Amino acid sequence: MNEILVIGSVALDTIATPVGVNKDVLGGSATYFSISSSFFTGVNLVATVGEDFPKKHSSLIKSFGVNIDGLETKKGKTFRWHGSYVDDLNCAKTIDTQLNVFADFKPNIPRSFLDSKFIFLANIDPDQQLFILNKFKHGQVIGCDSMNYWIQNKRSSLEKLMKKVNFVFLNDAEARLFSEESNILKAGRYLLSLGPEYVIIKRGEYGAVLFAKDSILSLTPAYLLETVCDPTGAGDTFAGGLMGYLSKADRINDAAVQKALLYGSVMASFTVEDFSVNRFLGLKKKNIEDRYKKFRMLTMA
Amino acid sequence: MNEILVIGSVALDTIATPVGVNKDVLGGSATYFSISSSFFTGVNLVATVGEDFPKKHSSLIKSFGVNIDGLETKKGKTFRWHGSYVDDLNCAKTIDTQLNVFADFKPNIPRSFLDSKFIFLANIDPDQQLFILNKFKHGQVIGCDSMNYWIQNKRSSLEKLMKKVNFVFLNDAEARLFSEESNILKAGRYLLSLGPEYVIIKRGEYGAVLFAKDSILSLTPAYLLETVCDPTGAGDTFAGGLMGYLSKADRINDAAVQKALLYGSVMASFTVEDFSVNRFLGLKKKNIEDRYKKFRMLTMA
Image 1 (cartoon, helix red, strand yellow):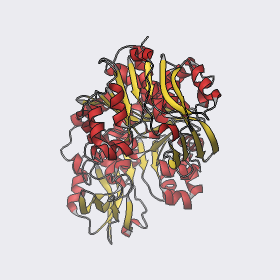
Image 2: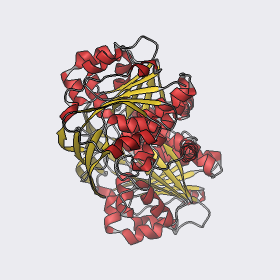
Image 3: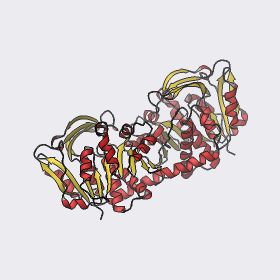
Image 4: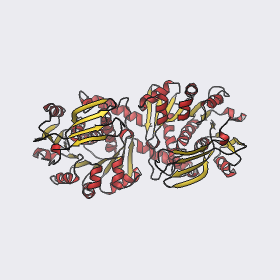
């Protein structure tokens, strides 16, 4: 099996939504990505937490079959993020960020993880993302995320990274900032021109646009939900579903990537229905397949 | 052939966009709807203009094969709307509205128009929309649009109207206001419960959601464009393409309506590429078919 290695954050989130506030719940990009992709393939997680990180949280991640040998506990406190969706369910307002042990995250990658065929570099310093890639021989399928802060402050490192990755995941605001193009079509084409094989521009509740060399490949709306509880982690869950599906499918061509886009959307639709990763507790592969089929029906004319 | 009757406004618009300002250009809901649907079927237009309405504009509408026997010229000035998209290309800010002869629009429907099998009631006073419907024997396929003002001020008339129409077109803000539901799925279901067979919630650059009895029927993104010049009339053009296609197809079932949704999106995508109805000058049916095919490819996985 093609295993996926994900390198990112495992965090404690405090999330305010119109539904209520949840304090110190399990969060972090690597958490969402790994649990999402675990429904499709074997997953190896690399992240760092503090001594205050509850054992039950690591056990939970492990219970999805994720290999957490790369989850290091360091002296200090776990990365904490406090966000609010009270004003706008589609857009997180950061109330507080405490990087704690994540501030100088130098990922130690267990040797056995170096055989992973798929790698997802979640949103961390692009110099760190480049440093990690240097540990690998060529041939892996690599995805990455980033954010406004790095686009503004480390553009040249990000541009270097773009030449080395197959999949780039950005939301529309990030894509516009990076490309300096307000038109999403031009933004996507610009990002493609930097090197990646596929660029995925995420548009929250409005779905995603997938760009492939020479053409727009696919436009997908988001699955419509009766209840949107907490959008945290939707993007990483989406990436986890997309890369997880591809890893299992063991082929990367336009048809497979289009299918993967729908699987990513389906996984993200589950995440937002509950706080933290709660919606995945007890979720069955059959539930995923059922929603995938329903989603295909809704989006096909 | 199933002809479509459209009753709405023919106006002179002054439009400011980031690209520039265009003064007193041809606009109005009935203009956009009729020109869009003229690519599919026979169209009868009912509207009123003032003595200042340039002859070249009526000739232009007529040149698309639209029957303008119902375009009445009244003493006074033509309805004028001044809108700006300078701050946000997705959302018009009204700078000025002069209803002029449109203020007491009492549509006179030529007798020959009473045989039209399809009727589109563009956004006017719902009491007028109801009054118009009373002139017809049953059996027509009826679509209608509305707006915030009528939802807030004539809710009970609108509710009566909902029981008499097959297709309702609203944008997401209007659907939320009418239903008092922020969730779009709940909003769509509520609107369906009022009586129409199909509810179409338009989401601007993000596409549309089509609700049919018992289920969501279809989610469609908008066709992505390199250049968005002027979004005015996109909604009426969309409705014109959708109902025009259905009129030509001569059958209304879920499959036909799903196809019609894509045709509506394609027609709207042309409108926004230029000011006023300019993009339709010289447009060929083949251009529409080509974009329809491309759009299908982009949205299918």
